[in-house]
Image (tube, rainbow, N blue to C red; front, top):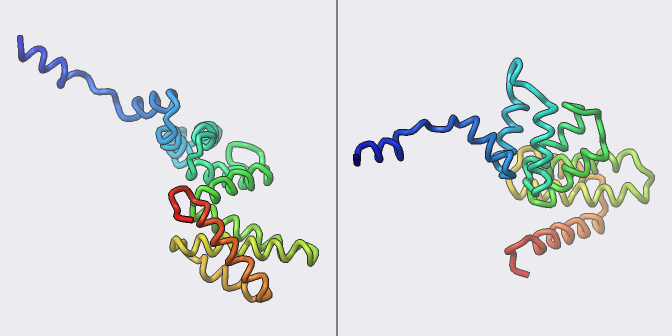
Length: 181
């Protein structure tokens, strides 16, 4: 009798990992939704399904999952599983950057750097300062090439713009949850 109870508790049919991730995702678990999206986005053959990846990234992104927000933003930028939408791309990458994702901060910094090269002088200054801020934050986390990219931005900045950029970096860090003010 004891052995049959033991087998029922510990020897039962395990739920396959894919099904358990799917179930967790369907029940609103952001990490499971991200994991499922990643499988669809990185799959091969019939497993590759950008539309499904975007669906699950969106579910996780809406719950402030920074990596899902970043990946969704990249999908919008590249038109994977959806039409290219630069506004949505910038929205989701910006959200991930504000949550502290280094890759998103780097990409957002590069966006602002490119914008600084295209805009009128008044807007160019703001774009350079924002590029500096995001690239500095990304570099502080050791994200590759951020230091070099920030160096290129600095070459086009005034001393006042660099000072403003450093103030914005400090303000961003001070506003992070759990940081001392």
